[in-house]
Image (tube, rainbow, N blue to C red; front, side, top):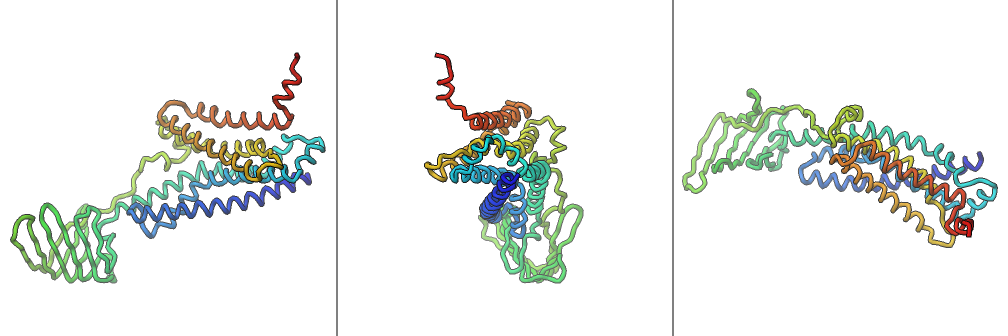
Length: 363
């Protein structure tokens, strides 16, 4: 019990440090990615931190799984280098005896991975999708910032207002430049207000003038007005159902026969299984030669992690194209990795080797 307690304490320290580092790296990458999306107009500038937070929340299952794997391999490799495992083996204990202690430490993180992948992952994707839809459905007036020239959603108009107004649907010193159907028009007004007429939104300009020119014609038409109305877009509509598999709840995916929904379900089910398999696999891969490089074993473990997740992505695409079913995907990939990890632990536990089997074989 004393050894198990000390092992879990060291695993907790290693897991915490690895988790902090990985979360920091992922948050930095997601911030850069989200800022790039905001610069391209896919995300509202005011929603950058929200989108980044939801994205990091969706990536937490992978981060937790990798943290568990790195903590397991790093902690056990250190024990091999410091000859603590030699003492453990000399006391009559085998490698498989460490598996219950590892699982007792890792089960809260595995439970967190299951909750995050089955519940938080679709919720975070749904929140990101709603923010993007809201930003894309803004009207032209919603895009205007006082003191800035702002292009409309269609790219055919440029708006400018002088300063904020105490009322949200009014503005002062309005400038509109439009290029539609071969007609270039510049409209200016002292004030404007927005009104709803049916399903359309109109800007009603007061006390201004309008300058029109036709493409290819030298004529210029100048007119003054006391009240002039122009349509600026349709009324705001609801978000609706995006239909994306990543935003659907896990219970809803269970009743869908579409390959895209089944592929998403297979991915979510596979994440907690991956966390469990990585802990078992880490125990089998942790054996290290004290005379070898200190980081070689960890690099090999990280390579195994990358290969595992690439096979998960490949399997998800196969399920999405209908080549394999969810049960076959889970059984072949995750069941195969678990069987390989248990076989590796059995070999290390019983100290099997090809040379020993060769010596035992009859002449």
